[in-house]
Structure formats: C-alpha cells, structure tokens
Image 1 (tube, helix red, strand yellow):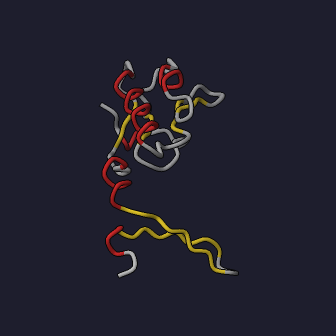
Image 2 (cartoon, rainbow, N blue to C red):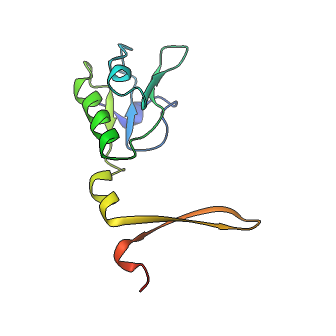
Length: 110
C-alpha cells in the first residue's frame, strides 16, 4: 500500500505520487509517459498530474499495474466529479500577478 509520507520529493503536488517502495521497473512510464518519469538516480516520480478523464484513466491504470503498489492517489484531485461541477477562472491584475479562483458553477452570475 502506498504511503503518502514516504513519497519522493520529486513528485509534483497533487493526488498521484510515487513512494519509496518503487523498484524502478518503469512500467508506469510505459503506461502513462506523460505523467510518470525517473530522474538520473532512477527515482520514479509523478511529473504531471492527470488533467482530464483520459489522463486520469492512464494514471489509475499505472497505479493498478504497479508490481509493488508504489503509486498512490490520496484523492485530493477528485477530477471525476469536481471537473463536472466547478469552473475555474483566472484573474490577472496589473502589477499583482496571476490569481486563480474556483467557483461552483451554480454561483456564476448570481
């Protein structure tokens, strides 16, 4: 069972991660190369979180096929339901930089 507290520091923030039980077989990279990678020291990590249903399925497939269960999903992304009910809007203010906000769809324009 993957352990979030044992994840490699190279993992990008988000739901999916690779922990220290990884045996560096590269199967995850074969299944979802846009999401999993290894550095020069053969440390496996998630370099891009899933962003849509197709990429979520690939990451889930990599997790299910990992021979040592080193791939975790702590559920924080929740893309299946969240993407359907929340819209994001990016607001940029001159001199302030980018600000991102998420609002439930039913609150727009009300």
